[in-house]
Length: 197
Image (tube, rainbow, N blue to C red; front, top):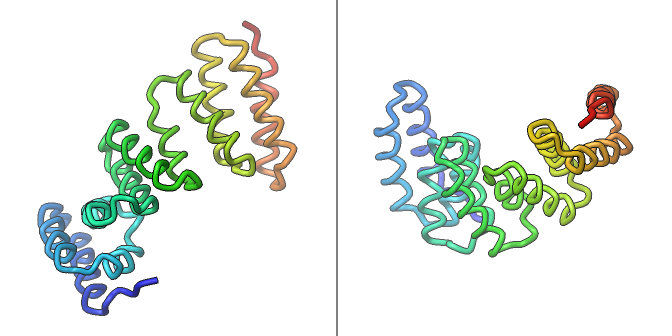
C-alpha cells in the first residue's frame, strides 16, 4: 500500500479546504489537475482516499488514476460513484461499472452500480436478481431487488414481480436482527400481501 507524500496530502487538503471556503469548482479542478498530473499514481490513490465521498474531488483525481490504471476495478468504481453522485448520468456510470466488472468480477460495488444504472424498471429488476444471486449474503442487493420488484409490481400490476418482492422481503426478514429493520420488513410484507391484481 502506497503512502501519500506529506506535501501531496497537504496540498490536496489545502485545495479541498479552499473549495469549502469559496465553492469555486473551476478553481478546485484546476488545482486538482496540477496535483494529479505531477503525482505518482500510488501516492495519488493514497492521498485521494479521504475524499472518496466528495464527488467534486474524487472525480477529477480518479480520472487521472483510471487513465493510468485502466484495469483498476476499485478505481473505476470510485470514479463511477463520483460521477453518479455528481449527476453524470447512467450511461457513463454504467460503462465504468461494466469495465470494473470485466476487470474484477468479484467487485460488488461494480455490480451494484451496474444494476443501479439500468433505467428500464423490468431490466433493472433482472439486474438486481443477478447481483443477489451472485452475492447471496449481500442484504443490500436483496433489499434493492425487493424494492425494485415491488415498484414494478405496483406500476405494472405484475403478479410475478409481486411474488418476487414478497419472497425476497421474507428472506430478508428471516435474517433481520434489528427490531426496527424487522418492523419495517413486516410492514412492507403486510402491505404487499394485501395487493390484488
